[in-house]
Image (cartoon, rainbow, N blue to C red):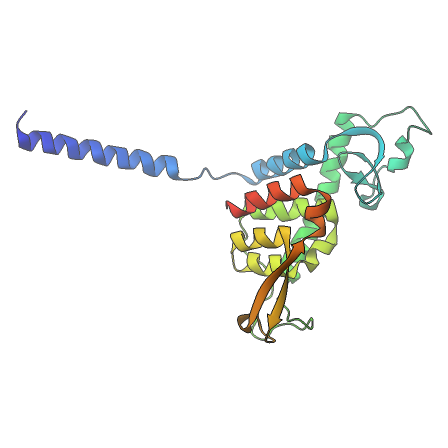
Length: 219
């Protein structure tokens, strides 16, 4: 093989390797069903399953897979060890989880649709955009799981939601774990954010909070 043929062969190989890298580096697009399944698996992994009633980190009666009476459906107190020997089976718990998630997903969408950045006094910032659109599905799953755990008050996580509106997932992950206090001017561009300690969520369920924040950071 002469030098010219060898160079041509090397060029073909290099181009082939580049195409392989390009194909393998592209993330696989998941269907809505696959994202739903991923969300359910994550919640089951973090919540665990208990057939009898127990008290969660805020002393709320819970049963199955993080199910509370606020979500509607079966009352966890009906599965108390002191009142009955009946357990909520894993199959029943998964059915209840799907029902709970329908409501939680709607709450998530309402929060994303209505969100609008506000100043320190709670007033809507001038020229701000309403709603969080085209959110990465992985980020939406994370927010949905936070709402599943903590309820609609996640809608008050203004700094995290503002970061999500700007598609700044790394910054959003910081606000998931740490509370920041703004000092300085009235508007965001004139302020400095100073960390003042972990969020209550990170204190109460540290492992879960850190795992979801890591996922957000890696989007």
